[in-house]
Image (cartoon, rainbow, N blue to C red; front, side):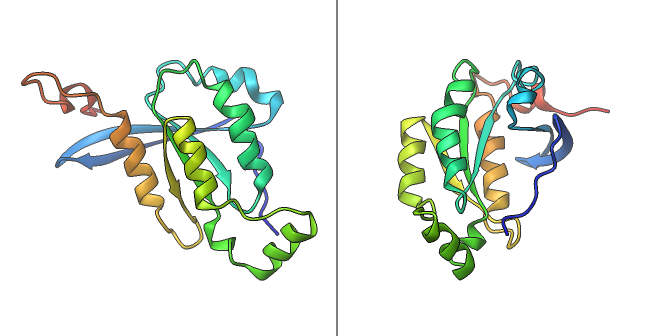
Length: 164
């Protein structure tokens, strides 16, 4: 009902995006959450500019996992956090709601997610891959959070300009 996960250690994507009309090379590492992958996952942390911690709004156990496990696992990574609630398109689905009720659970609310985001000093964005709701906003927030702070006259893009 909630989809299937592909169990991989890491999926890497590189894209070039325009920031202030200049190309910026962005590398996205999508890492697996299974315990068996922790050593491989930790190899991705050094040099990380932004961390996106994702959970499904219709799978409360994933929200609890972010709150109880992942925030601790990445505590020593010096990078801004983006908290991403996924599958928002299912939050009003009657079958999903019934399944959650039968387990004594509920959809993770925006209020709950924003409270966690405030606690961990993160930005919160709720998305849906199916409807594409706020997908661009989530990645834009990550890109902007990862940009270095401008000092003096040196333009920020000098370090980030992607040359092949």
